[in-house]
Structure formats: structure tokens, C-alpha cells
Length: 478
Image (tube, one colour):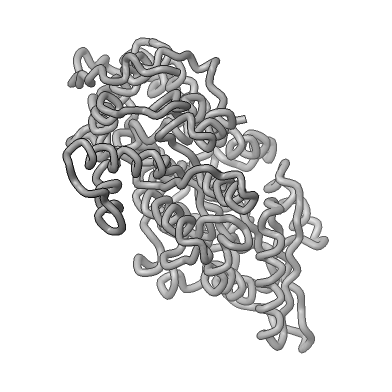
């Protein structure tokens, strides 16, 4: 199952909630869906806040932070509860309606926030101006938790992609070039600078590298990535696509069929022709393993790759040094943008202790960020997070953080819940040779039909700028 489909599987189940939606879409006053601001009076004893979460990797971290918060508090203890991710939001709603051990706060992906808000399960955070600011979070994180100009969650951790490279190979190539030029062997900062200069700023840079690279034995491909996963595909056209605007909540903003998007997708198709491999032969796990085994010089992967690299190093089975870098652009005038998903801490609108829930949410998203990656392997959505003592891991995760800062959050609109599956199919079809113009036009019309609920036929774009890539990859082996 691809990364995108893993994120979307819960969203498909959430449709069963029957959450209201066409009747409230036209409302301008969303206040009935938000909880009150006032904390109910305590009975003088320590009361318990219940936190629901679905990712077992968070258990150690959450238990530690709950203990720290409870120790410092005179009247509150926190109980983290690991629950199934299947039908998660429905279960939050059922428990809240019954009033039986329901969560005061919970962790969910930001694309669920509209569903949660319309069901009364996401209260507006208290005094967001004091905390949800640009000096604490990148705009991608702030957009992720914003719904109709209200902040209804705390950005916690994120998933996105980055360019990974085999640093061992690049260092060897730098030394080879220096030897051919009659130079002394570069070391230290000089070596670091030359490796950095070798990293591609554009796709053309990558193709030029491929055309000149003297690949060692064992290298089967210069650049490979999972073309079946929208999470690793999307960045090719990400800067040219807009659904829902910056916060992904405005149904009036739908722009996926435009000249720039068609140019980007045409370039993407050319890359598929260079590789001459169909999507049915690609497997994400196998591609990552090939990269870790030294069969590939460059790849695109999520933060899971950094965890696997660290595991191999701890086991003593890692034969290479790896690095991560920001994503390359397509050309000097066609930037790229990655897709991102932000996991948020949400205050349940049914909580009897919203003030305390907000206090713990801020504590969790702020005080503990230095331990979030070392204990849970998660990329904090907050600036200035730590990534442990390993300098290589730190450097790689900083690259992911840089990509996240400029990423495109998934939209929150319920009407676009299957848009990402349609777009993933479109990327696959285009990679395999489908007509770029017709495919993207169909995706746009299907999306407009879902949102506007009336058939829409767009005016065809008869022509769009065509960028011919070099053919330096055309003879590359697989």
C-alpha cells in the first residue's frame, strides 16, 4: 500500500459518519461546531485528561510527556490511550456522544479536520495568537490546522519527502574528478563543498550528472523513485496545482488544469520515457532497499528512509554514507513543491476540561519536541526541533524539515477526499504514456463535479509550453 493510500484509507471510512455536509457547506457562521472557551470547575481532586492516538511509535514519547506534565501539575493527570486507526473519528464521535471514557484530545492527520469540526469534535484552540505564529511554525504547519480562518488543532509532527543520495558515491566521484584534473585529494570542508555543489538544483542538473557519471560496479540506476505513490510523485507538479487554496478549505479554488501544470506533467512523462519502465514493475520497498544496498545513487523517499538508514548503521550492516537534500526544481523557472501531511493535536469539542486540554496540547507540541524524533522517529512540525545526537541523522532530518516548510498540505474539504486517488492514477497513466492534456482535463472536471455537483466541461488548452529534456538518461540501465 502506498504512503498516500495509507493516509487516505481512514478517510474513506469516515464517509460513513454521514457528517452533515452539503447542508452546512454554505454556512458562514461555524460557531455552533466549536466548544466553549471556559474551563469547568474542578472538584479539587486531580482529574484525568484522556488522549487518544493511533500510532504505536508514539507510545514511549507520549507516556513520558504525560508523566512529566502530570508531575508538574497540581490538578491534572494525562492518560494516553492507543486505539485502532480504523474508523478512528467515528469512534471518537461515538465515545463522546455516550460520554464514556471519550478523549479530551486526540491526534489525527490535518486532512480530517473539516470532518472533525463539522461533527463538533474539534474545538477552536484557545488564544492561538500566543502560540500558532510564524516564529514557531512554518506556514505549511499553520495552514494545515486552519479551517475557515480558525485554528482547530496544534501542529505536532509531519510527513513529507526529500531527495536522498549516496554520499559515498558522490565523494568518490569528487575524488576521481580531482585526480583527473591533477589536483590534490580534496578532504574536509573542500570535499563537503564539492559534494554539495554536485547535488542537483534542477532536473536538468540531474540528467547532466547522469550523462557524465562514471558509475562504479553495482550501480544499476542513477535516479529511481516510487512512481506509484503520489506522495513521491506530486512534487513534480505541486507548485502548479491548487485545490482549496493555502488552507485547503476553499471550494472556490480549484486549479489543476493550467498551462504550467501541463508543462510539468509533460516533463514527468519524458522522465518516464527515459526510464522505459512501467508502473507495474515498481515497488516502493524494493526501491528503497536497492538504494540502501548501493544500487541507486539518488532517490525520493519519506522520513521512513532515515529511520531505516539509522537502523542499518546500528546493526553494522550499512556499507555507505547517505545524505538528504531539498528537492530539485524541474527548470530554473519551474519550481517544485512536495506534498505534506501534518498530524495535529485536536481538542475535542465535548471535553469538559478544554483549558487543561489546551495546556497539555501546547506542552506536547512544544516542550517535548527535542525528544520527538529520538523517541518516536517523527519530524516535528515546529521550528527548532532536535533530531538526536547522530550528526548524519540530524543533517538528513533538517533537509526534510526544509522541504516541509515549503510543502503543500493535503486539502481538508470532504468533497476532495478521493481527489488524491484520482490524481495518483493520473500520474501513473501519464508516466505510462497517456495524453497529458486529456488526462489532466479529466481530473479537473471530475474534481469540479464533486465540489460543484454539476457537470463541468473545461475549455481545452490547445497548446502549452513544452520543455524538451536532454536524453542523458535514455541509456541508463535498470
